[in-house]
Image 1 (spheres, rainbow, N blue to C red):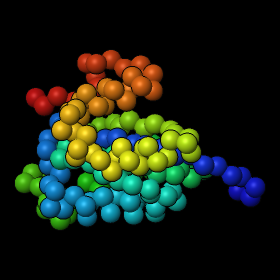
Image 2: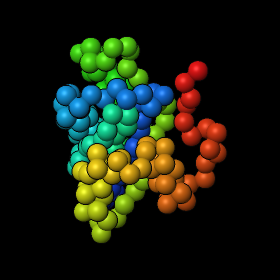
Image 3: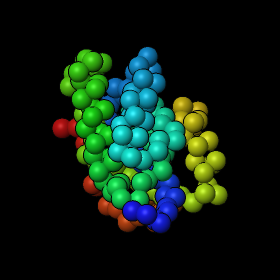
Length: 153
């Protein structure tokens, strides 16, 4: 679309199903690279992807004609497929249903990159559930605590 200019930064957060610690440090970097490629293939621009054993953060610039839901559905689907095809986990790998996505302006760019870059250090102080709820509250997103996470049955 000529003469349409946007700069939309999105931080997306999603977890391993049941928040199992399945993202092994030995291959996590390769997973993050794979996810960055998927995001770029959607026409967006991957900025930084990082996480720990049970969840990840993706920071990317959203293309003006691509819905966030499509980027994340494809990212989760294709990265799950990659993990399973390479037999990186002992059982079938799945991401948990859903995600959280937050938009940022240019002035927050460096802070978001720094936050995502330091995930391991950050999670020594706060677990994923606490972090996730902190983000939802920070961005004033209404949620019912009973439905935020799928529980393992």
